[in-house]
Amino acid sequence: MKIEVWWIGKTTAKAFLPIVADYEKRLGRFHSITIREFPSAKDKNPNQQKIKEGNQLLKHIDKSDHIVLLDERGSMHSSQEFANYINKKAISISHKLIFIVGGPYGFSQKLYTRANELHALSLMTFTHEMVRLFFLEQLYRAFTIIHHHPYHNS
Amino acid sequence: MKIEVWWIGKTTAKAFLPIVADYEKRLGRFHSITIREFPSAKDKNPNQQKIKEGNQLLKHIDKSDHIVLLDERGSMHSSQEFANYINKKAISISHKLIFIVGGPYGFSQKLYTRANELHALSLMTFTHEMVRLFFLEQLYRAFTIIHHHPYHNS
Image (cartoon, rainbow over all chains, first blue to last red; front, side):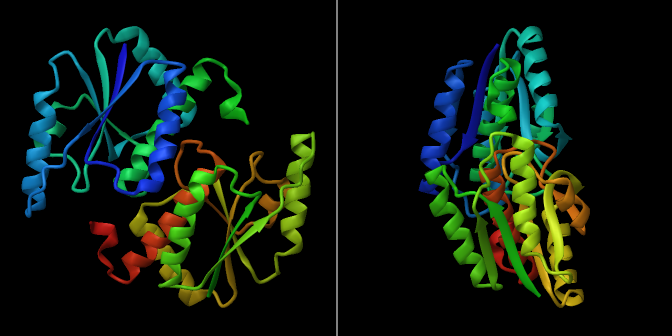
């Protein structure tokens, strides 16, 4: 199973960059993870921007990819449950497992329709840049749980 | 109502410091917030450390203080619900509203007994330094919602 994490737009809050880079590096020790940053569509109309960004992502999605949108309306899991999820998917998925963090206006309807699952990190709304950081930390935590690395219990 | 946010131990992940400082500054524009950092107790026995740290905090808690522990077992709220909560408390509480972020080993039993409420940011476990950042961002977001500032919807 190949895991990819996709997001739209550069991380403009520069203070987040070293923390995101650190988790990306740590994750690499457990599993090959590809982070893909797609350019923001920039449209005065938020809805149009959302649609354009969604279409851009859809071009890169293959039929066999398993798509998980990180969305407040999604199902919630504890870190242990999320680790079990990753472990199970590692066995059952032969293609890509792609987690997508929405842009500032969220996901287009077409992307919701294509998605296989919706996962929520919290009921609370965070900046989309924070979601990137939180999610990478959870993915790293999941691998430390799977590999009995002491990170999760320290 | 005076709002305080308490945590134990210095922020050792230096990359977090400017982000935490930024939210502290932004919060100050809406409401006077005091962040209190208590020294870590450092004991080889995690349970003893938890007890010592709890006792240290309890010394600084007044009878009239309203204590909220940020704990995974707590109730969960959307950002809008949390804003409503802060707004309501601002009217009903004449003393301090104190939010406490646990140390690496969590809260002592005495602190659980003294607490008025438990709030959870997520079902997931994050590092206690991330929780500081998440919570300050949510507190800031709550004030932007209360004051109809565009932050929450941008």
